[in-house]
Length: 295
Ligand code: HEC
Ligand code: HEC
Ligand code: HEC
Ligand code: HEC
Ligand code: HEC
Ligand code: HEC
Ligand code: HEC
Ligand code: HEC
Ligand code: HEC
Ligand code: HEC
Ligand code: HEC
Image 1 (cartoon, protein in one colour):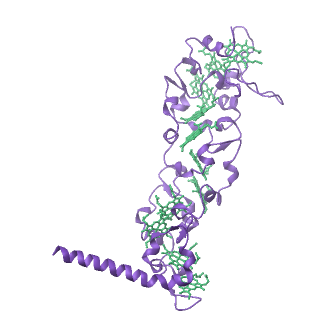
Image 2 (cartoon, helix red, strand yellow):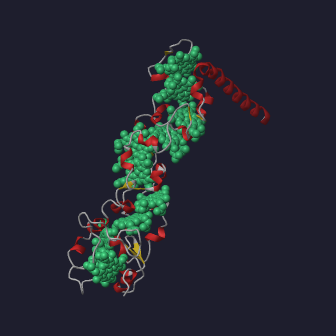
């Protein structure tokens, strides 16, 4: 019993393969170039007619025996779902590009790029998305090297903006969580609002900030500018805050050469083991002064 079942299985496999080959060479005689790139769609082994069911190869130009362009068995994406059932679009957010056809990104035959992509990332994305939005003085490292899919699903997702997961979890896949979870956590960080302060792709500011550094902070802490800050006792106008005067160069942070002096020179914007979110160990506020002033 067992050997004969095997025999039937083997025989039908053989039949399938030879049927595919019977349809294959017919088309490949004239269309060989389509199959020649490095990465070949495994569907080609199943024969050109696994997709092009309605091409009459006997005549050139071909007569198409159905109304679907290229004599295909179905329109996209249905054509592709025929074999890629798991890709069916069931999630909340579907990339509008998929509606433009799977072949807006994939070559259905063969390609020089992995996953049959028509171009490498990020260039593929820039065929539809304006590259300018992904460039600036500061570019997020994964964006610069085209790792768009480390944050976005190219097809569909249950998260807005096709994100593979949402901040802050998304960010912690690459950034060490311990820097954001010290004893005192800045409330917007605790709430996962990384994007209130940072742009995800690129920015004209340091550290991908959305605005000129002190103003990122002053958006929520307008009061700091109104009352003398940090040194109220002996300075009526308080400590400089790093707000640049027109046409003047920024102050440099004495404790971090090369970096700009601003709120973040004294406070850690994310979290700190000290009260007051201080960047440096401090039991009292005055302890931090010595990080920059010899006293
Ligand atoms: C005798 C040579 C020859 C054979 C065999 C052949 N084709 Fe073609 N095919 C052509 C030529 C020539 C064209 C028109 C020029 C072009 O678009 O490349 C063409 C065009 C096509 C097109 C594009 C039609 C369009 O509207 O733009 C498809 C799809 C196609 N062939 C599929 C097939 C399939 C599938 C087979 C096998 C079942 C096949 N061809 C067999 C020569 C051939
Ligand atoms: C997985 C499905 C699939 C298979 C298998 C397939 N094709 Fe296609 N083919 C397509 C789709 C989809 C298009 C339309 C491409 C587009 O819209 O950009 C197409 C377009 C074409 C075209 C015309 C445009 C072009 O891309 O040059 C030719 C010619 C063609 N196919 C020939 C073939 C031949 C020959 C085979 C077998 C070696 C084959 N196809 C196998 C899906 C397939
Ligand atoms: C006749 C069956 C069939 C059809 C129709 C089909 N595919 Fe495939 N495809 C396969 C098989 C088999 C594989 C290899 C196993 C897998 O990855 O699922 C594959 C793999 C792929 C891959 C991964 C390739 C790689 O190198 O990892 C992509 C991308 C792909 N298909 C895109 C498409 C697109 C786009 C369409 C519609 C234009 C399509 N497929 C239609 C059978 C098919
Ligand atoms: C916006 C461009 C784009 C569109 C449109 C698109 N894909 Fe993809 N697809 C990709 C990229 C990019 C990858 C590689 C993902 C990766 O490497 O993480 C991919 C991977 C795949 C794979 C390989 C699966 C895997 O996880 O490796 C398959 C199969 C596939 N796509 C099928 C399809 C089908 C079917 C459609 C239409 C319903 C489609 N794609 C539409 C960009 C696209
Ligand atoms: C064929 C054109 C096309 C390609 C290629 C393409 N996209 Fe899109 N994408 C669109 C369109 C159209 C929209 C909807 C309008 C918009 O937001 O610009 C969109 C929207 C998006 C969105 C926002 C989704 C939302 O729900 O708001 C993200 C994220 C995205 N694309 C990422 C990518 C990535 C990453 C790539 C490269 C892997 C890519 N796109 C390639 C056409 C494309
Ligand atoms: C580090 C993660 C990350 C990487 C890498 C990344 N993105 Fe995004 N992208 C995001 C986040 C987060 C958003 C949502 C921004 C928001 O809601 O303000 C987004 C939004 C988008 C949007 C929607 C635009 C809008 O303003 O609504 C597009 C399009 C997009 N990304 C394309 C890309 C492309 C193309 C690449 C690769 C060049 C890429 N992304 C790389 C995280 C990333
Ligand atoms: C209140 C605004 C704000 C929020 C919210 C915020 N950041 Fe920052 N982030 C900054 C500022 C300001 C800097 C620049 C620090 C400096 O001066 O070196 C920075 C710097 C960074 C850096 C560069 C390395 C470092 O630590 O200096 C990373 C990575 C970073 N942030 C990730 C995140 C992540 C992930 C989140 C969410 C969990 C987040 N940020 C939330 C303001 C913020
Ligand atoms: C795929 C990995 C990856 C993900 C996901 C990721 N980052 Fe990054 N990010 C990096 C790398 C790599 C660098 C450069 C090295 C560094 O500073 O750690 C970087 C640098 C940064 C910087 C400093 C940029 C500069 O030039 O000063 C900020 C700010 C930042 N990331 C914020 C975020 C935020 C916010 C998220 C979540 C929305 C996020 N990152 C998600 C990989 C990632
Ligand atoms: C999205 C709003 C928001 C932004 C932007 C923001 N903060 Fe805060 N911050 C808060 C909230 C809410 C609190 C808690 C209530 C309070 O003290 O005002 C807080 C508290 C603080 C505290 C007091 C912590 C303590 O334990 O006493 C400091 C210091 C601080 N923020 C510094 C900054 C700095 C520096 C920036 C810019 C890098 C900044 N904040 C940007 C919302 C914000
Ligand atoms: C020279 C160091 C220094 C700079 C620069 C600085 N701070 Fe402070 N900040 C302090 C000290 C010291 C305290 C007092 C903490 C205490 O008394 O507990 C403080 C307290 C705070 C507090 C909590 C109490 C309050 O006043 O609301 C916030 C919020 C704050 N700073 C935000 C900011 C912002 C926003 C900026 C930039 C516009 C900034 N700081 C610039 C040193 C500094
Ligand atoms: C991260 C570095 C840093 C820390 C910490 C710091 N300062 Fe300063 N301080 C500066 C810089 C930069 C200036 C401006 C120097 C200039 O104008 O050239 C300054 C200026 C001053 C001035 C002169 C003000 C003026 O208008 O010229 C006083 C007074 C002062 N700081 C006191 C303090 C006290 C008190 C502390 C502790 C609460 C402190 N500083 C913490 C960097 C720092």
